[in-house]
Length: 101
Image (cartoon, rainbow, N blue to C red; front, top):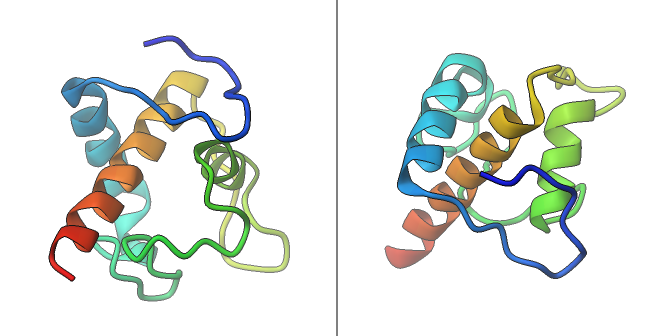
């Protein structure tokens, strides 16, 4: 997987393995706050596609990496590759949620 900063408007392209690995990391580090299916809880819903700090893949990456000041959301110092995998798994949550609406 190429790990680079994406130009605005470019879509994240990853493999099924990236989505799976990102999903495992999400379940370990994010599900407690955002719910197992991204439905929200202490943290906002991630499956509905509404992001308060920008909905582009790069925005989601930056939010995960840097956290959100003044909230319970810390930044995560994982590798760029791991963070992009988490972004891919969140994109898959959004995709799954919108298929059922």
